[in-house]
Image 1 (cartoon, helix red, strand yellow):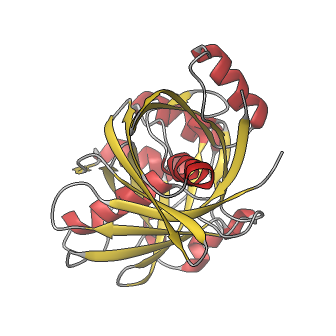
Image 2: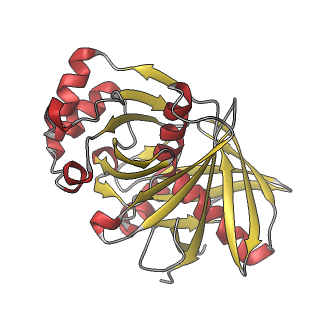
Amino acid sequence: MEILRYAAFTDRADGGNPAGVVLDADGLTAGEMQAIAARLGYAESAFISERSGGAATIRYFAPEAEIPFCGHATIATGVAIADREGAGTLLLSTPVGPLGVDSRNVSGRFVASLVTVEPRVEVIAPAVRTDLLRHLRLGEDDLAPDLPVMLSFAGNIHPIVPVRNAAVLRSLDYDYDGLRRLMATQGWNATVAVVHRLGPAVFEARNPFPPGGIREDPATGSAAASLGAYLRARGEVTPPATLTVHQGADVGRPSVITVGIPRTGGVTVSGGAVSIGA
Protein backbone atom coordinates (compact mmCIF):
# COMPACT_ATOMS: atom_id res chain seq x y z
CA MET A 1 0.00 0.00 0.00
CA GLU A 2 1.30 3.42 -0.98
CA ILE A 3 0.24 6.57 0.88
CA LEU A 4 0.44 9.56 -1.45
CA ARG A 5 0.49 13.15 -0.27
CA TYR A 6 -0.91 15.98 -2.38
CA ALA A 7 -1.69 19.64 -1.78
CA ALA A 8 -4.95 20.60 -3.51
CA PHE A 9 -6.17 23.92 -4.93
CA THR A 10 -2.64 25.17 -5.46
CA ASP A 11 0.31 24.96 -7.84
CA ARG A 12 2.94 24.97 -5.09
CA ALA A 13 3.85 22.42 -2.46
CA ASP A 14 3.58 24.88 0.43
CA GLY A 15 0.11 26.12 -0.58
CA GLY A 16 -3.38 24.69 -0.68
CA ASN A 17 -4.75 21.93 1.52
CA PRO A 18 -2.71 18.74 2.01
CA ALA A 19 -4.48 15.40 1.67
CA GLY A 20 -3.42 11.81 1.99
CA VAL A 21 -4.45 9.64 -0.96
CA VAL A 22 -4.49 5.82 -0.93
CA LEU A 23 -5.35 4.42 -4.35
CA ASP A 24 -5.39 0.76 -3.29
CA ALA A 25 -7.34 0.70 -0.01
CA ASP A 26 -9.27 -2.55 -0.62
CA GLY A 27 -7.51 -4.38 2.20
CA LEU A 28 -7.99 -1.67 4.81
CA THR A 29 -10.61 -1.63 7.56
CA ALA A 30 -12.31 1.60 8.59
CA GLY A 31 -10.19 1.62 11.74
CA GLU A 32 -7.00 1.33 9.71
CA MET A 33 -8.08 4.17 7.42
CA GLN A 34 -8.85 6.29 10.47
CA ALA A 35 -5.42 5.50 11.95
CA ILE A 36 -3.66 6.51 8.71
CA ALA A 37 -5.61 9.78 8.57
CA ALA A 38 -4.77 10.51 12.21
CA ARG A 39 -1.08 9.78 11.64
CA LEU A 40 -0.95 12.06 8.59
CA GLY A 41 -2.78 14.82 10.48
CA TYR A 42 -4.18 16.43 7.33
CA ALA A 43 -7.68 17.87 7.27
CA GLU A 44 -8.81 14.80 5.28
CA SER A 45 -7.39 11.79 3.52
CA ALA A 46 -9.06 9.83 0.70
CA PHE A 47 -9.15 6.05 0.31
CA ILE A 48 -10.00 4.41 -3.03
CA SER A 49 -11.29 0.84 -3.23
CA GLU A 50 -13.37 -1.43 -5.48
CA ARG A 51 -11.94 0.18 -8.58
CA SER A 52 -13.17 -1.35 -11.80
CA GLY A 53 -12.96 0.33 -15.19
CA GLY A 54 -14.08 3.92 -14.79
CA ALA A 55 -15.68 3.53 -11.37
CA ALA A 56 -14.50 3.21 -7.75
CA THR A 57 -15.53 3.72 -4.14
CA ILE A 58 -14.04 6.55 -2.09
CA ARG A 59 -14.09 7.21 1.67
CA TYR A 60 -12.83 10.29 3.49
CA PHE A 61 -11.28 10.45 6.95
CA ALA A 62 -10.28 13.48 9.01
CA PRO A 63 -7.86 12.93 11.92
CA GLU A 64 -10.74 12.30 14.32
CA ALA A 65 -13.69 11.08 12.25
CA GLU A 66 -14.96 9.80 8.90
CA ILE A 67 -16.40 12.60 6.73
CA PRO A 68 -19.17 12.00 4.14
CA PHE A 69 -17.58 14.17 1.44
CA CYS A 70 -14.40 16.16 0.92
CA GLY A 71 -13.69 18.41 -2.04
CA HIS A 72 -9.95 18.91 -1.69
CA ALA A 73 -9.19 15.21 -1.16
CA THR A 74 -11.29 14.37 -4.24
CA ILE A 75 -9.34 16.90 -6.32
CA ALA A 76 -6.09 15.46 -4.95
CA THR A 77 -7.27 11.95 -5.88
CA GLY A 78 -8.17 13.02 -9.42
CA VAL A 79 -4.75 14.57 -9.98
CA ALA A 80 -2.94 11.64 -8.34
CA ILE A 81 -4.61 9.19 -10.73
CA ALA A 82 -3.94 11.46 -13.71
CA ASP A 83 -0.26 11.70 -12.75
CA ARG A 84 -0.06 7.92 -13.04
CA GLU A 85 -2.50 7.13 -15.84
CA GLY A 86 -3.13 10.35 -17.74
CA ALA A 87 -6.22 12.52 -17.98
CA GLY A 88 -9.58 10.82 -17.74
CA THR A 89 -12.93 10.45 -15.98
CA LEU A 90 -13.80 8.44 -12.88
CA LEU A 91 -17.23 7.87 -11.31
CA LEU A 92 -16.85 7.71 -7.54
CA SER A 93 -19.30 6.14 -5.15
CA THR A 94 -19.32 8.32 -2.02
CA PRO A 95 -21.38 8.28 1.19
CA VAL A 96 -23.44 11.18 -0.21
CA GLY A 97 -24.01 9.71 -3.68
CA PRO A 98 -22.24 9.26 -7.02
CA LEU A 99 -19.65 11.86 -7.93
CA GLY A 100 -17.98 12.40 -11.31
CA VAL A 101 -14.32 13.47 -11.38
CA ASP A 102 -12.57 14.63 -14.55
CA SER A 103 -8.90 15.44 -14.98
CA ARG A 104 -7.28 17.36 -17.83
CA ASN A 105 -3.87 18.70 -18.74
CA VAL A 106 -3.68 22.49 -18.52
CA SER A 107 -0.34 24.03 -19.57
CA GLY A 108 1.62 20.97 -18.54
CA ARG A 109 -0.08 20.22 -15.21
CA PHE A 110 -3.23 18.33 -14.32
CA VAL A 111 -6.37 20.03 -13.08
CA ALA A 112 -9.27 18.03 -11.67
CA SER A 113 -12.96 18.89 -11.52
CA LEU A 114 -15.85 17.33 -9.64
CA VAL A 115 -19.58 17.84 -9.93
CA THR A 116 -21.40 17.84 -6.60
CA VAL A 117 -24.65 16.19 -5.68
CA GLU A 118 -27.82 18.31 -5.87
CA PRO A 119 -27.38 21.29 -3.50
CA ARG A 120 -29.91 22.72 -1.11
CA VAL A 121 -29.98 25.95 0.88
CA GLU A 122 -31.90 26.32 4.14
CA VAL A 123 -32.77 28.94 6.73
CA ILE A 124 -30.95 28.54 10.03
CA ALA A 125 -33.05 28.49 13.19
CA PRO A 126 -32.77 31.78 15.13
CA ALA A 127 -31.55 30.13 18.36
CA VAL A 128 -28.94 28.11 16.47
CA ARG A 129 -27.82 31.24 14.62
CA THR A 130 -27.37 33.02 17.96
CA ASP A 131 -25.26 30.18 19.33
CA LEU A 132 -23.21 29.98 16.13
CA LEU A 133 -22.33 33.68 16.22
CA ARG A 134 -21.54 33.49 19.93
CA HIS A 135 -19.05 30.67 19.41
CA LEU A 136 -17.57 32.47 16.42
CA ARG A 137 -17.30 35.55 18.64
CA LEU A 138 -19.05 37.64 16.01
CA GLY A 139 -21.60 40.38 16.68
CA GLU A 140 -24.39 41.53 14.42
CA ASP A 141 -22.29 44.54 13.44
CA ASP A 142 -19.62 42.18 12.12
CA LEU A 143 -21.96 40.62 9.57
CA ALA A 144 -22.52 41.62 5.95
CA PRO A 145 -25.78 43.59 5.83
CA ASP A 146 -26.85 42.20 2.45
CA LEU A 147 -26.02 38.49 2.84
CA PRO A 148 -27.78 36.45 5.54
CA VAL A 149 -26.36 33.60 7.60
CA MET A 150 -27.79 30.38 6.13
CA LEU A 151 -27.09 26.66 5.82
CA SER A 152 -25.99 25.28 2.47
CA PHE A 153 -25.42 21.69 1.38
CA ALA A 154 -23.49 20.41 -1.64
CA GLY A 155 -22.24 17.17 -0.09
CA ASN A 156 -21.75 18.51 3.45
CA ILE A 157 -23.81 20.99 5.45
CA HIS A 158 -21.90 24.26 5.85
CA PRO A 159 -23.14 27.30 7.74
CA ILE A 160 -22.41 30.26 5.47
CA VAL A 161 -21.48 33.30 7.58
CA PRO A 162 -20.80 36.41 5.46
CA VAL A 163 -18.91 39.15 7.33
CA ARG A 164 -18.81 42.87 6.72
CA ASN A 165 -15.20 43.39 5.70
CA ALA A 166 -11.73 41.90 5.47
CA ALA A 167 -10.77 43.21 8.91
CA VAL A 168 -13.48 41.10 10.54
CA LEU A 169 -12.33 38.04 8.60
CA ARG A 170 -8.66 38.61 9.52
CA SER A 171 -9.48 38.92 13.22
CA LEU A 172 -11.56 35.72 13.43
CA ASP A 173 -10.77 34.01 16.74
CA TYR A 174 -13.45 31.52 17.67
CA ASP A 175 -14.31 29.32 20.64
CA TYR A 176 -13.06 25.92 19.44
CA ASP A 177 -14.66 23.76 22.13
CA GLY A 178 -17.97 25.62 22.08
CA LEU A 179 -18.22 25.52 18.28
CA ARG A 180 -17.30 21.84 18.29
CA ARG A 181 -20.12 21.04 20.71
CA LEU A 182 -22.65 23.07 18.71
CA MET A 183 -21.65 21.44 15.43
CA ALA A 184 -21.91 17.96 16.97
CA THR A 185 -25.38 18.77 18.30
CA GLN A 186 -26.52 20.06 14.91
CA GLY A 187 -24.95 17.23 12.90
CA TRP A 188 -22.62 19.60 11.04
CA ASN A 189 -19.55 17.45 10.43
CA ALA A 190 -17.61 19.67 8.03
CA THR A 191 -16.55 23.34 8.29
CA VAL A 192 -18.16 26.69 8.98
CA ALA A 193 -17.61 28.98 5.99
CA VAL A 194 -16.90 32.52 7.21
CA VAL A 195 -16.72 34.55 4.01
CA HIS A 196 -16.20 38.08 2.74
CA ARG A 197 -17.22 39.27 -0.73
CA LEU A 198 -14.43 40.94 -2.69
CA GLY A 199 -16.43 41.27 -5.91
CA PRO A 200 -19.66 40.00 -7.51
CA ALA A 201 -18.26 36.46 -7.82
CA VAL A 202 -15.01 36.65 -5.85
CA PHE A 203 -14.86 35.77 -2.16
CA GLU A 204 -12.25 35.11 0.47
CA ALA A 205 -12.99 32.55 3.16
CA ARG A 206 -11.85 31.11 6.47
CA ASN A 207 -13.15 27.70 7.52
CA PRO A 208 -13.06 26.54 11.16
CA PHE A 209 -13.12 22.72 11.27
CA PRO A 210 -13.55 21.48 14.87
CA PRO A 211 -15.37 18.24 13.88
CA GLY A 212 -12.23 17.05 12.11
CA GLY A 213 -9.87 18.06 14.87
CA ILE A 214 -8.49 20.91 12.74
CA ARG A 215 -8.67 24.52 13.90
CA GLU A 216 -8.80 25.95 10.37
CA ASP A 217 -8.98 24.31 6.95
CA PRO A 218 -6.69 25.87 4.30
CA ALA A 219 -8.95 25.01 1.31
CA THR A 220 -12.46 23.59 1.48
CA GLY A 221 -13.93 22.46 -1.83
CA SER A 222 -17.28 21.40 -0.37
CA ALA A 223 -17.67 24.77 1.40
CA ALA A 224 -16.83 26.64 -1.81
CA ALA A 225 -19.45 24.53 -3.62
CA SER A 226 -21.97 25.29 -0.88
CA LEU A 227 -21.18 29.00 -1.19
CA GLY A 228 -21.85 28.76 -4.93
CA ALA A 229 -25.19 27.07 -4.26
CA TYR A 230 -26.04 29.75 -1.67
CA LEU A 231 -25.28 32.58 -4.12
CA ARG A 232 -27.37 30.92 -6.84
CA ALA A 233 -30.32 30.34 -4.51
CA ARG A 234 -30.27 33.98 -3.44
CA GLY A 235 -29.93 35.36 -6.96
CA GLU A 236 -26.53 36.89 -6.21
CA VAL A 237 -25.06 35.48 -9.44
CA THR A 238 -26.54 34.94 -12.88
CA PRO A 239 -25.85 31.34 -13.98
CA PRO A 240 -23.92 30.04 -15.71
CA ALA A 241 -21.34 31.80 -13.57
CA THR A 242 -17.85 31.23 -12.21
CA LEU A 243 -17.07 31.82 -8.54
CA THR A 244 -13.51 32.24 -7.26
CA VAL A 245 -12.76 31.56 -3.60
CA HIS A 246 -9.47 32.57 -1.99
CA GLN A 247 -8.67 30.70 1.21
CA GLY A 248 -5.73 29.61 3.34
CA ALA A 249 -3.60 32.75 3.45
CA ASP A 250 -4.44 33.20 7.14
CA VAL A 251 -2.85 29.83 7.94
CA GLY A 252 0.09 30.24 5.59
CA ARG A 253 -1.21 27.96 2.80
CA PRO A 254 -2.87 30.17 0.15
CA SER A 255 -5.30 28.45 -2.17
CA VAL A 256 -7.66 29.25 -5.03
CA ILE A 257 -10.87 27.29 -5.63
CA THR A 258 -12.91 27.69 -8.81
CA VAL A 259 -16.62 26.92 -8.72
CA GLY A 260 -18.77 26.62 -11.82
CA ILE A 261 -22.40 27.50 -11.10
CA PRO A 262 -24.91 26.15 -13.66
CA ARG A 263 -28.54 27.16 -13.85
CA THR A 264 -29.63 23.95 -12.11
CA GLY A 265 -28.13 20.85 -10.56
CA GLY A 266 -24.80 20.22 -8.90
CA VAL A 267 -22.00 22.76 -9.04
CA THR A 268 -18.51 22.10 -10.38
CA VAL A 269 -15.41 22.49 -8.21
CA SER A 270 -12.05 22.69 -9.96
CA GLY A 271 -8.42 23.04 -8.97
CA GLY A 272 -4.92 21.79 -9.37
CA ALA A 273 -2.88 19.69 -6.96
CA VAL A 274 0.82 19.01 -6.49
CA SER A 275 2.65 16.10 -4.94
CA ILE A 276 4.28 17.06 -1.65
CA GLY A 277 6.33 13.89 -1.18
CA ALA A 278 6.72 11.94 2.00
